[in-house]
Amino acid sequence: MTILCYSQRLLNPFRGSMCCIQYQSAEAVTADGIKWDIYVSNAALLDGLPGNRRTQVSDIRFGTWSAQTGLKRGPLYPSDDFLAMEEMGRVAYEYLLKVHDSVPFPFLDSFELWLLDRQGQPLALLDSALTAEKIDMRQAGAWNPGLNCRKTFTSPAARELGIDPATTGASGDYLASYINARAGESPAAQVFARNADGSGTGLHGSNLDSACSDRVLPPDTFPETLLDTRQHDAAHHELINDFIAWQAPWLLLLPTLDTETRRRYERLARCQPVKLVQHYHLYPDIVDNAVIDAARVEVRLRETVPESEQEEPALSPFYVELSPEVSD
Image (cartoon, rainbow, N blue to C red):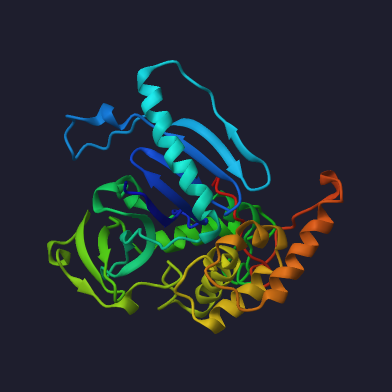
């Protein structure tokens, strides 16, 4: 019996991670380390179809589970196919009970789709997957900062760049236009297989120069923050760094951060306690537990205040961080 446990980034925009327990065509998944959704599907429907077709079968909810509420079953269907799926779901669920405290699982999404800049270098991460075949090439056209960014991201660099900071979404829209303009009029994207040492071997792509095929790029070519922060003028450098700071609650999910970077992001993320608390169960490491504990206390206090009296202001990334909702 082969059961795969892994983490995968949620991308374009980067908005968190998903932990998955996979057994045949059953999956138990969580985006917060607390609530798990268990799905089953009839993968046998794909038998005989060409392997290069992006074909998807419908998922059926086996149930939801958390340590606090236990298992809540989904609908039952009287069919032989469902009985087979039911058995797969049962195996995934029973394994979940054994390993749910072991999150986060290792990131196995080592195939990455990068938007390239005009020089053919990685500019922004668009998608990732466990295999090259599962990369969604429909993402290849542009980098997307996301709806949450458009709602809450602002930057002190806005006025210098001619952005009206009072207009909702203006900073995010400007950032998206700026980043995508760096990709040129005919943007190219390439899939890379990331190696154990952090280097990347170039595979297929979109609008790709033939010289890029089979190339191997060193680790430092790929931005740790998933968005290139180099070769910008002062105002755009400030804008991008503010965006990176705003993403701190999500960036803390990445296992590659060094200790001081993680400490700095924890302090930034503390300014949005609700968002930090939604993710911290999946952080691979915590440098300053006092920061996390303070955020948890504040969230508990907020829960005693009527929702109508709560307000989430749009703050500059100099002060704030990112929202972990996975509905962008």
